[in-house]
Amino acid sequence: MKFISGLIALAALASAAPGKAPTPLDIKLEGAGNAEIKAVITNTGKNNLKIFKTGTILDSAPVEKVTISSGEHIVAFDGVRQRISTQNLAEDAFQHIAAGESIEVTFDIAEAHDLSIGGKYDIQSVGAFSFAQEESNELVGSVPFETNKIEIEVDGEDASARRVAFHQKRTRVQSDCTGSKLSVTQTALRNCASVASLAQQAAASGAAAKLTEYFKSSTSSVRSTVSGVFSRVLSECSSTSSGVASYYCSDVLSSCSSNVLAYTLPSSSLMVYCNLYFTALPALTRSCHAQDQATTNIHEITHLSQVKGTQDYNGYGYNFVRSLTAAQNLNHADTYALFANAIYAGC
Image (cartoon, rainbow, N blue to C red):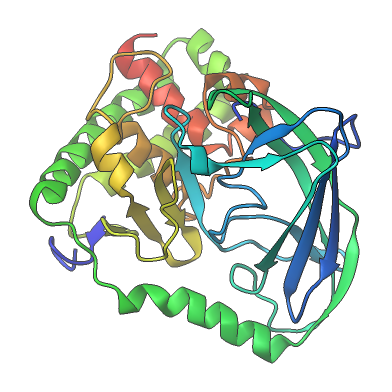
């Protein structure tokens, strides 16, 4: 783990919808400029909706909002992957859409995808929004969506310049792992290493039932994959002067919106820990399926391509983990974090 300065160079059940399912959301995409997309989101149902926007197509951060393809080739996403607190959600983390109402949002797909070749690309988004009741901020369910597929023509040179500008943005802001944040970070990394070590041992030779609970299998192949991931997490948490990641304590990519604990930019091996991480989480918890600083570090580290390159699938928490397929669990950041919590807490 490399700190950039201050140290040494220091929902609820939202998952991809398998196909078109009954939904009160109609989302239409259209081109809105070179590598810019406008989404028109209409509530066609009879009830008002209060949807959780963090980490979705409504988020202003460069999160994964659409799938981009050129022929048979899927363009890799290289924006930020977040860990989100699902407790004490802020009101501004929600978008209200009244029955019959339409809202619009425009976003830049060039920042987090390499479109430098230019030419024609197909764009679509399939997923789900978590939602809360109007009088509450507690996530109680999800509504699926599947947009139309559109084709756009991209000026590759212009798109490439915008992507480069986004990825260089971090160099213009200095990190701030100092003072109390430095102390918290050092403790978190020590705890991360200890918890990852326990999880690595449990994955390699522990109870089959526990591994199956989280990863839906305890075959030798699954044991090898999971224990290997935790071994690499342990290595990353064991040093503040080496490792693959650059570690920031300030929001260098302006993506710490409400309820975002931390985020990772895998393409640059960069991790950011937001103010909420330092103020809302305990260092460690013995509560089952709960969040803490150590397992948040584990979550983010698994996003690194050198560790596993995990995804979030727009979902967090134990119930979401249980809803995934075995293959998805092996590539889901929160599955690793919650397994580690379960081993440490004795769940």
